[in-house]
Length: 321
Image 1: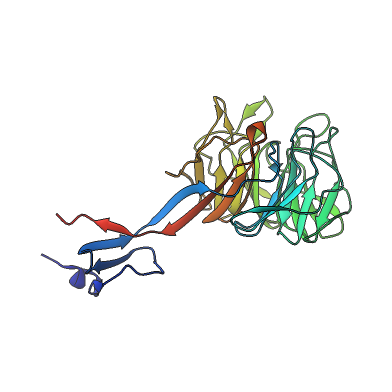
Image 2: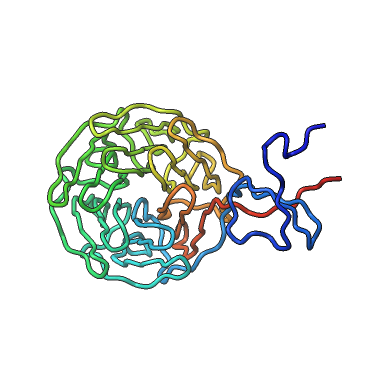
């Protein structure tokens, strides 16, 4: 019978305590506990710090990373101009938006954020930039709209889809740090969809399409055109989005039967349903981060709750009986 050494060319390391910096797939024998252990990558949600002000209807009003995040706007009610910054454990208040609004989109980082579109109560075309302490009004979107998708950074952002007058639009606009320019349309007009990625490698998924009907469609943008890609496993709207075009997350949202705790992961062509689920269904919450470290905050009934998503190598004992 073959052993690990003959199969892999390596002996299993014997150690008296578990390694502190685990690597996915790592195998070792703990001589203290006399157990064989392995480190698989485990995906899970855990509770994070509570928002200072509970809010819903953020849509895409978030930016940054899991340990340096930013959320802004939303509905308390009434419409909010509040900004909060996250350090990975707790939220603190930042400078207020110049215009209170909900159902807006965001891009950028905690110290260089971008807020655009929304409604408060009319559909909004305003753009504001955040410098880490205060917001400053910038050039307006060409088309005023709410429930739109957003991607990119403060000086190179993309706005796509949304609800304008008189209905859903497929319009995309690119921002260069000073002005917006209309570009290629989405293949299908939609609002309340997820958006993430960069200005030249963006991802749009889910939402509500003409009908109206909830969608599971995915579109990728390469800087010059939108292309249809693999469908999500479950059609939904008002979901949280994080990651990049080749490694995206679709978090929570609303399916035809109501709010869900479901998470799907995207690898650049295909969506997979993750075993990790939210503790509470979230609709219209703010999400941001990477495909391995993200958070989602707020949601129905002006929730203050934050949940953090991580994929990390975790020690597990192996049954050798």
